Image (cartoon, rainbow, N blue to C red; front, side, top):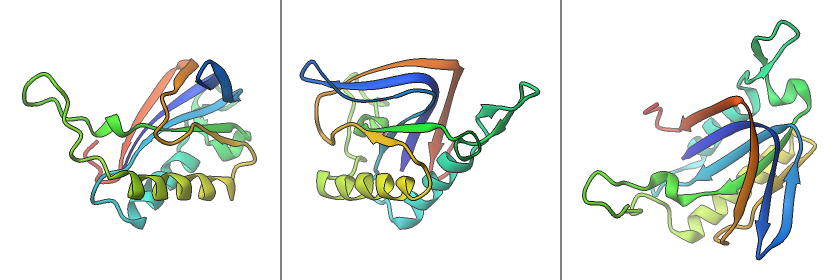
Length: 149
């Protein structure tokens, strides 16, 4: 499982020209499910998203988590995080999970986030979405459950 996590001042998802969801200060999480992912992969990414110290404390150090500051989370499915362009010029997405598996883990991720965070919003799985954000910092963190980075 992979995630790109951005600390944002605000973020939103628009579908067919209509605002679908939006958050204020918090995290925008782009989430991709791999063919081989299991529950342990979801738990790894979930723990990192909830507990990474990505928000600043009173001394200006990144020392607080989303839980510490009561921030909001917006999650957007993005299978293209497993795009492979090492050969040729057109990305291959063969490592991305099939829609049934990806939907299951995407929905489970949202459910588990909601157990700990008051405001969790999402895009719509497999929809053409327009994502807008104001990255705060900018701060962008890459997560991979196989720990390749």
